Length: 379
Image (cartoon, rainbow, N blue to C red; front, side, top):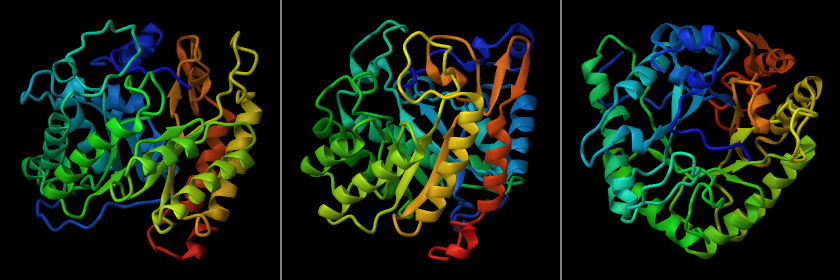
């Protein structure tokens, strides 16, 4: 599993010329339609961390590639450093820049500040603690909807931007891993947070959808634990992070999750793959995790996975797929440093072979989720 990088932006990891490039690292009505929603999206932390010019250029390039959806951490600790005091300039800029390209943002509401957890940890601890009181997280979620939802103050302040309001909110990230949720077993305490967040989000925007945290590894077991703890009715989509070997195993993990959903009466809910990746780090790390590939292997597995996911999207109810990630650094101990469609190599950025594969599929599948049940739009 990739390491959590929240305290430092990607720009701090880049070589000096690129670090410089990333430095500083509509309608206004309330009846906006749901944002444009397609099948294939991206995680692009570098666009979020970059300067305005870098951000605009990157989002424009991604949109030209066929991207209509991006997934981005809204770091609670950074956005609300003190209770009720918000620092939203960075998220404001990102959401507006994405909207100008017609791109919808899926926020991950994640990473509690120490004032909410009561625990001060070293930045190198790489552990995320849940808040002591779910109500504090719910208040944060409500504030985010009030800023970025369909009636959000951001859009009133920027009436010249055609708004693409946030209608989908992912609650936390990978809580079945101790590094992302320090209280284990996680299900009962995570559901307290999820219920509070859902109530707050739906009160602020009755049309919003609440997305379950992405579940990696033995994801079907984690989903089973959520259901056994009383989770049915607390989310509108199940999210998976099927990091595995051959693409056929991605489909197996989705089928296993589908079986848990059916057993618990959630057979009609969609499945989202909110992180999909094959790091091209084979032979470049001392401790492989079993899913590393070469550059050619990354391109081949990406293409095969998107074909399989497309072919099964109606049968298995697969609604969205996000590739992790757009840009990575090719240095450091983590396999996912080689996961990017574009990679930092010394003082330059190079495109991986997987970029062309991703672009072909993104353009081919662009718009395929806009007409529910119309499989012809996804060929």
